[in-house]
Image (cartoon, rainbow over all chains, first blue to last red; front, top):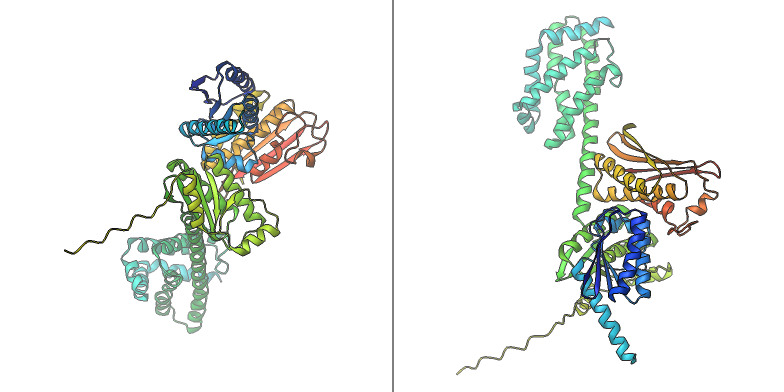
Length: 129
Length: 291
Length: 134
């Protein structure tokens, strides 16, 4: 069973979904990611879906779960590389990705994570926490 | 009635080439474009096939109803002739001239060959009715083909009328003109998203100054477009909200969930601010001293 | 209306869902669908295929390419002999789920296609027919 590789870029984790996912793979990914966020003290999780031609409610649920778990672990989740046809279909399908931010590509995704983390730290400083 | 048919056909058979020449001549004389038609080899070929088909379709003696099965090949032939003419830009009349200009040569032929006045009158009457039906059918085909052509052009126009403009680095504008129905929304979404990918823009200004009314359906289409853009990492600003539109939105309780501005200028100012840009006046040039 | 192509695929497990998507893609491409139209029908197929596996105990999918004069379309027929759906209108509501899903399978799929028909009753299995035209 193929695993999905998780790369570390600074304090972010990058996952590139290249294959048509089935249940076992999706579950494995969620488990692996959660472990790695803790293990690597990651502040950001970037999920690259530029290879996905289809995003259905199953994948949507997986993305929402990942975002929810990261949030609990104080990490930001950004989905990048969504294809136009997929975006149009998702909107028609009525699927909302809750707690999931989106960016055009990996570069912008990293920049977004950076901004959010910095802003969060500024907030903490301001509050004296 | 059997006699009529055989006389008709026999005459056409016997004098085919002379009839053809006469007929094509008539067509050319009919209009300036007719001359162009006459030169075209296609017309000679079509005329030959017409006479051929006339013989075949009348084989069972049925000359009254051109919608019957016997006449199907003839109808197809006329459809082809019409379609070619539409594409070449000829009018319905010019197209029907193909059939109608056969009358004169045919009547001359009948007059030469038929002695009895009564018999002649019958023949001419039968021929007229037949050629009239065929000519009118040609006009109908012309109309239908034109409608198809217009339909295709409308589709192309639809695609061209949703331009996406880049106002500045990372800032796109989408001025919507006209009503936003679901077909248009699809095209709008595709254009906008493709442009976001190509330009890497993070802000899209959707201007609805040119959208006459915003009701629940239009609002849904706007929301879809805005959501799709967001999924591509671009934030949207809605602009061009006229006072009446603002009122309608409130009355209908529409939740657009997007920053909206009255004018595109305001939207652009906001977009620039968000992009970390400011606009400054340049210092006035110092006047040159005249020594 | 003519049925130009016809394929029957099993939809019994998670891997079959992936295969079903690929089979639908092939037919959609053959029918000359635009990329967006392809994406929509494949996504709809994915939703219903998952339902068939998760709730219907597995079943079959028939994929047909249709031609009606100038128009070309793809029709999907999902069938299972599962427990059936007791309340179809409830099941068709956005967000309603009897399992772990997002509750968008039926209602979402319906929005992605031009024609949608569902027949189901407790003990009689379920049949869902979807069609999208170019």
